Image 1: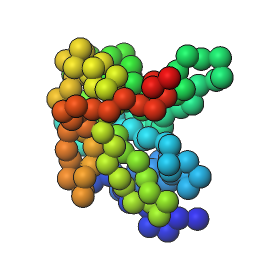
Image 2 (image 1 turned 45 degrees about the vertical axis):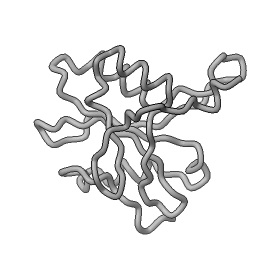
Image 3 (image 1 turned 120 degrees about the vertical axis):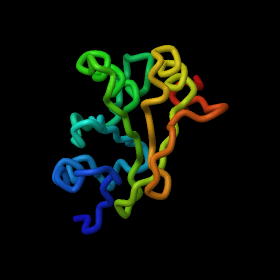
Image 4 (image 1 turned 135 degrees about the horizontal axis):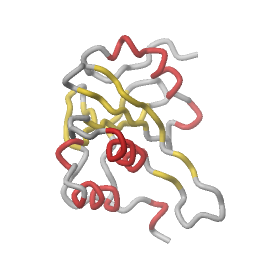
Length: 141
């Protein structure tokens, strides 16, 4: 049992602490990337989730958290106000920054949403889109 799970540093996130405890799994901290979709106008978490592995017959190894969040925003965010946050947890429950890979970065740039995806670095909100992003290991084959 984790005693000190770090919550994302957003307004009213402590209200959703049970939701974040469900995201954390000590066995998957090396691979799982978590996302939350946040409505800053109402200071509330709209959706949370985790990257998902694909089956062995799939050409992709996983569905990245950013892509799941992008699909959700395209479907439900008609006013273009939601913000997407991605991060990883350490084994001790602390938030670690996660930057988008090359393919996810390209998708966000093509969808004109690159200004709405963030990660947390030392409890500060920073862009998840970086210059010269790396390719995800699953796409290097």
